[in-house]
Amino acid sequence: MVLVVLWGAVVRATGSGAGCGDHWPLCNGDFFPHHPRIATVIEFTHRSMSGICTALVAILTAWTFRATVRGDRARKAVVWCGVLLITEALLGALLVLGGYVKGNTSDARVLVQCVHFTNTMLLLAALTLTWWWLRVRRVSAAMASGSRAAAWCAVAFTILTGATGSVAALADTLFPSPSVRAGLAQDFAPGAPLLVHMRWMHPAAAVLAFVATIILCRYLSGPAKRWIAALLLLQIALGIADLFALAPVSLQVLHLLGADLFWITLVAVTSEFIFDATSAREPEPALVSTPQHP
Image 1: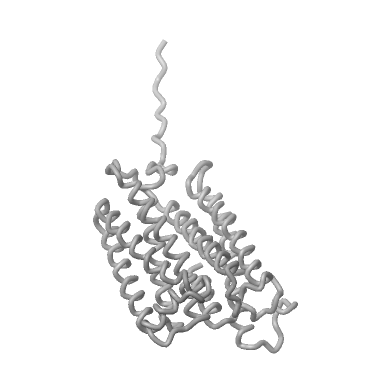
Image 2 (image 1 turned 90 degrees about the vertical axis):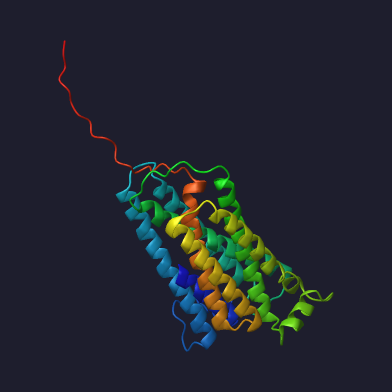
């Protein structure tokens, strides 16, 4: 799934979203494109990877239901994987069939782009929870007061950062800037499209997510705290590098990879704060028969 997300960024950054024409799920009306252009190869690769991911989620669903008992949290998470995978496909179809690809700069594309990437993050979160809850788990200790609120805030602001980041990346692709100063002037220019006006929202949301994550770290300890802190610092470094390098494709993909890894870790770490910490798969004590007395 992470590879699908990263390759989707390549599709957007190279303007290959229309590589298969206005056909979906077929590519230019065929199962396999003939004499494809480079844009067609990039888009068809993305669709093929999505198909492989769909097959793997189907296998994961069957395996999870076979390996767990009724009421297990992993079952609920894997069902959400299936639901969000369907909506992901429908949103992808909307982008293609609605013409929200290539050079489209409409306000509608901004909305669809935000919803699409938010759904992607939720799908990645559902897959993470399925994996995390299939592990052998222990009952967590009592949570400190305020930890659940801190976890929710960190998750919510990270989703906002991801959604606005997808818009900022699209703006960088369609309206590249010759310098950082020119880009800032472009963001607040009266005649700039909504896509460009929203670009500043990504760093603003990132600051909120940073503050929320720092507060969350107060309730963490051990490896969880170290992983969250390290990935957060990595994202800050990649974001600054992406800004001053004027968002080359390679840095955009690397920045997105760091975001995916941070999101996966955040979902796993906060799952025990947000959801019931009691494992549904803890073995029950064995029943010991005792002699019956009259």
